[in-house]
Image 1 (cartoon, one colour):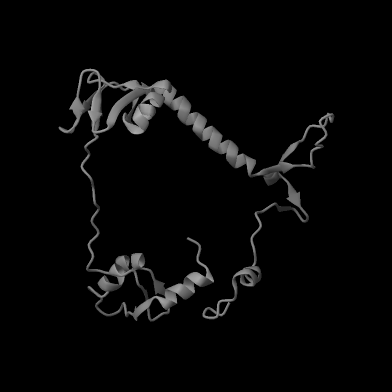
Image 2 (cartoon, one colour):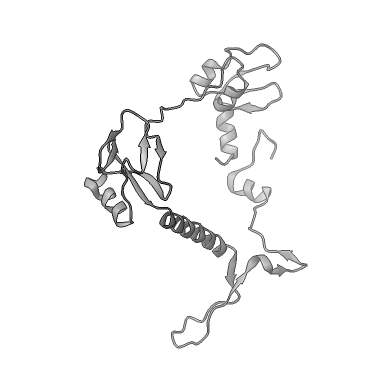
Length: 213
């Protein structure tokens, strides 16, 4: 979330109370957290309801963990396993996974740990999910392709044309991409993303009367 002048003004308008963290604060945050109110410390710092949770010593951190109903113990390590939806789109997702090379996992491949899992000879199901498998080699190839594609998209943001390509269909000119990170501008300064100044932000969003900016 981007903090803007409007965000600060809304927080100030939503002020519930001033709190002294030096005093006992057990239970003092409960109402403001439940109602989504911001509070202000004597230092002038604003606390969101989520930040107040961290300061309230009466709240004990406890994770909410769901039972591992889909847990399996892998026997055959030559496959990668995936719980696929067999009913979504009238079975379209299940058919899509099969077309990608996935097949049904069996009890020879894994040992389901939850009693709720239906353990058949030809398929292992849990609700509308079915356990499928694909060879580790195919899975690794797909994961690598995804990572290489992500890296290629990142590189595209770091390059530019050294000059505008000729749009003429009869032109033999080929556009040349240049890596922006290896090019310098002016006094050996590397190209950087444009970052607006505080004055430019104030001109577009209005000055912050409270913060004096």
